[in-house]
Length: 64
Image (tube, rainbow, N blue to C red):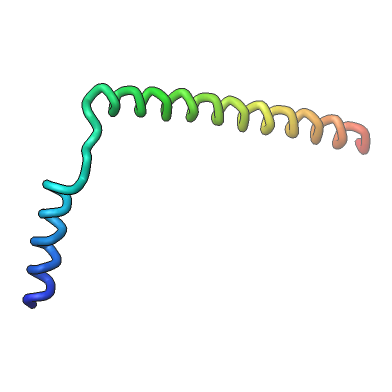
């Protein structure tokens, strides 16, 4: 039981004194970067899905 309480004490100490937390501005900038990257990746995946769907429709229409 002593090991568990020691673990939590050390974890709290590390989070409070050793971790460097980002500033509010850094956090906002990182969030904007992640959102933009997510939108770009989503658009690329949508384009690939749309393109492959059109190619498959063309292939299927040839064999009707």
